[in-house]
Length: 330
Image 1 (cartoon, helix red, strand yellow):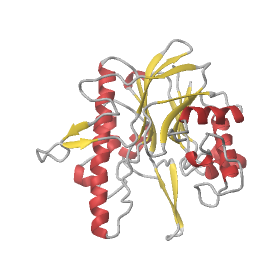
Image 2 (image 1 turned 45 degrees about the horizontal axis):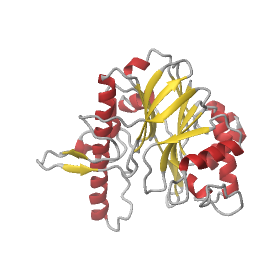
Image 3 (image 1 turned 60 degrees about the vertical axis):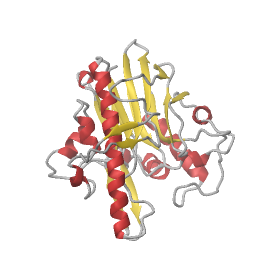
Image 4 (image 1 turned 135 degrees about the vertical axis):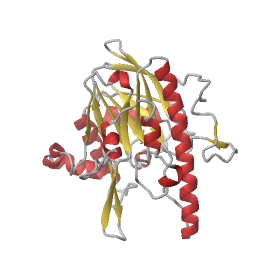
């Protein structure tokens, strides 16, 4: 089975209020990319990766007239994708939903946020004292993770958790002091979200349920100078539950060469691009004997993507993130 996670930047902008695609030459949310160009590029990428199920991070919006599942299924129908069905968890107010686009001939998926006494459902509140000041922090998800029960066509079952953790970037800061304050507050909240996720994962592992956690964690070891204040990254918190991702493990080890990257952001004032490892597919230990193989479809770092000029251009046009793929016997 092939699973994927793909953060598609400004995907919601490509649909009108009735979830119809806006295929024209107006500008999309991406720099110098039209609606039609981005739509075509996304379709090319999804066709090329040919996954049985794709977690769409920043999926189309659910609101008064819009519906994430309807929009994704219409997209799949227009481009004749075999991932013709979609499922989502709790809707949010950010216009960046989490949803799974999947092939109904390969698996069944349903939203199944089980009650857990160790950690609440993701649409609720979580209390934790992060900095040992004897004061509890109250944490909520602006984008509640999606918790699914999956059954494969061969009868295998596992839990799939799709996540998009809060960005650490100090958006809105107007001074260095404010930038520092916002950055620390954002990291505190992100780490709290990671602890919440970790406790849910530990509950499933204790119940001997295989777990796959995937999505955009907006974090990795050593990504910013504020990490040392808390002594760990959110990725490290999740790995300590027994989850595994080889790219995360590589980032945690000695760094003799370049690290993998799943995202590429323009820095116009510096005339260059920043690359980062933000997207992961983590599996519980009981799945590691199922011949897992990971691949980041990076247009410059993956040889096959580099050689295929049409695919390379589509990856660069579709989003500022690149798909992460897991092939595994399930």
